Image (cartoon, rainbow, N blue to C red; front, side, top):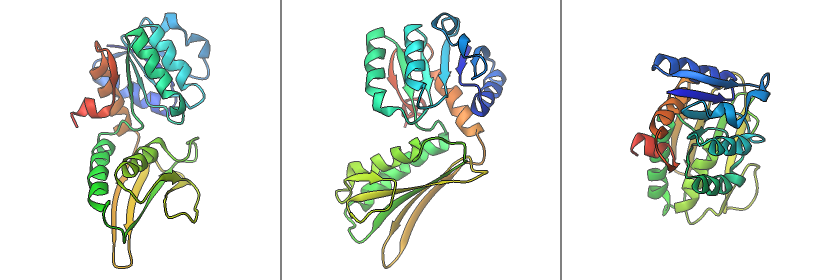
Length: 238
């Protein structure tokens, strides 16, 4: 495949390394140094686009790919207030969009473990649940998109929690998501259920960016030639 990389920072370079090893070519690589190359015409030269930029530019980039009729894999977080618009645009263009808050295979398995544990704990009123996420200091959004996904999975089945918050409060109906920014820290997510008797904890720790990068390339291979809205569960058959 010919791949357009929209976002060519550390993650983009890791994606390029894995993509080339898997026999793909990089048709376009857009960084802050050559944003003028981020055009519909240039994106059209690729078979699939992988978008890893930031919350301020993700929506516009996704729409450029859809306009170019190029399937797009998006890993930017912090822009989901406009995700439904992107879905609508994708359907209007008869395009393909695959969004994930985290492309790591391990994290997506962790999502499934979190959902199952949340179901088991939903009726255990003596336990309180919190989420903690730790990332490097260059990460701009807090909480992480992964932490938000984990929180929403818990909120879906836990009748005692009504919303997630990112700062400590006094409402027992709030699910606290603690965000820490430390270097070096590719990404750690911890779910804790605590009671006076015992604690239950599940944890995922990334050691480097390559798990995320591999997942993004697998997603690109999956979405190539397809039409519709997808996620990493579709890629991994979860």
